[in-house]
Image: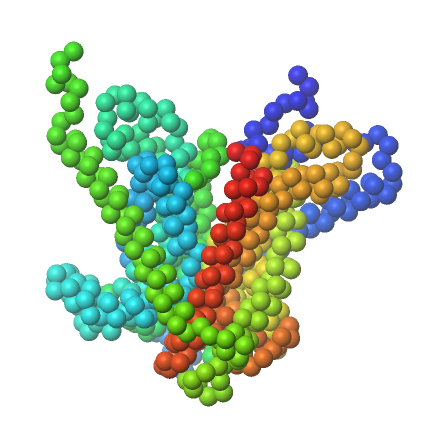
Length: 337
Length: 288
């Protein structure tokens, strides 16, 4: 079998498809060799451009935040006082707001997206599959700013009038749902974030579930399992790591989400136990105050928050991708619909 | 075989039905907000669209009736075009590199970095471009917004182009090279040509994704109440205008914001629908 005829599994391996094709044309003119060389140089440059952009973002963020890095050091991430007038900056309220709003979003979104993914891959009739996955993807296509606007005009009035009072009555004893209900606040941000990350979590979970080999399902069914038992034992157990990855990818998106959150969270740098209270996130403080920040220290503190956000989302995304990859690597590519 | 062994105990069957019901409820709970958003958007949006919306700029004083968002629509088009001019060549180029030329460590690093870039929050990209262009030029500009959107498009296009090129069977490349065509010609007019509908799909998805982006525009293009088509001036952009108007206290501006949102969503849905259409007819469909 000659090297040229070896079949490469297309798209699955990470070796380039052109690997076996280093055929040097026998009579290549100088012009054509030059053209080949410059074309390769051109595409190499654009690939290197991707590296350059990330390196450039990182250096700009570090350079921009150096003032605040020197001034506050680690205290920046311990202090909870955000006082631009006196030049005192601590980012704890924003970190708290980002974490809690994302957590609320995950608590709402994870069961929903798992349910949707399981329904689409394992339960629903074939004819429904395409349309349902299209609809969930449509949810991902709606811009953040439209979610924010919808939340302002529809969700907030609903929360203030019906959902909020009901929660306060039933779950008020937990201390999470107390105090005046403004409408905008941590809970609203969490709900809107949840709607926004459902499509991500569910589409990646779907990918992971379809990567589970069919034999696993058949084996479970052959042993007399009901459909749910088959899903639980044969599918979910095998896809655990990948599902965790999907959830963490959703978290990564929620952490960096800016516009919708800024529009509904109330933008107050306070740490309050009640989810009805207004709060602030890292991304939304940048969005709101960046163009007003007049003195250098203020600006640099905001850029430092951006730097922290950048590093956190990178770590979160990498970890998630590792998990997803651990499930899907061996699997053949399959169409989603 | 005794019959009792084959019947499933009632609690197992109940569990199974419960799981199915819960999954259906989840689907409904996800579809409901989607439907609610779209219906509300269409009702409010259609009511506020008129000819003036597309031909006029916002009226002079805040909240005064009349006026439109023509400048924001044109501004968005300019910023998106600038972004595409930056993002498409770089994205397609690095996709070609990854699929056709890369070997060893460097390709892996690029692929990895593209995924990292894809996960960077858009507001952070806004800050970086602010530091690069706005501070140096000392003023906000349409160009800066285009650069920010272009940067966001690159990783999406890179990865989709690479995937699509990898679907092209090796025998096609072999045939081209066997005919003595130089590799750059073979890559451009044979491999890329074969995968072109898939590549276009990726480009359009990237376009749809950035066209609603607001955060990276906040401190790059800034927004503008007046006509401007200049690349080095602050310019109005549709998502940005929607953001400002939605937060304003004026009913008239809310009306404009809903109209703008409808225009934006129609643009995005039309793009993604045509992507599906291309994908279902073209190469990506037939290869599977």
